[in-house]
Length: 141
Image 1 (cartoon, rainbow, N blue to C red):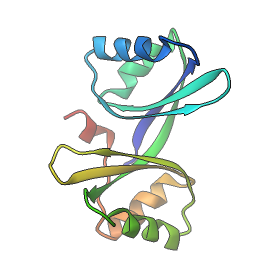
Image 2 (cartoon, one colour; image 1 turned 45 degrees about the horizontal axis):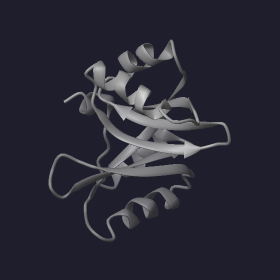
Image 3 (cartoon, rainbow, N blue to C red; image 1 turned 180 degrees about the vertical axis):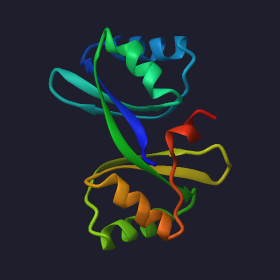
Image 4 (cartoon, rainbow, N blue to C red; image 1 turned 120 degrees about the vertical axis):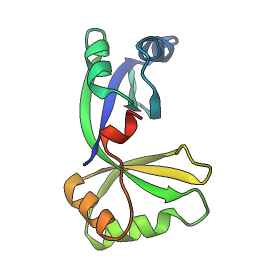
């Protein structure tokens, strides 16, 4: 099952990021991964949190937010670990729109997050090739 990514649209000005992170922290949610993309007048804070529904409701009063289904594939935290994952997706003709990574809780554990054209198929293909993926339930732990 894919995981939920929140895209929070922030004004591109000092203090905007700290205000959003403060609200998330104040709610007791854990930010598992984040990425920021810049546009002219705003930034897009892409976050994976421990409770996406609660944080979406919390931030929805102040920010424009969208939910996106993304795939997080586990990989070893070592050189070359990303290649087999990319090869599996490429062979299945899965298009990667964007990606970012984060470390896991184990010392040699990392995850790569993909926004792809077909999340369900991507997960099925990865799992069939022995590459585990995360679900929203995994993030609550």
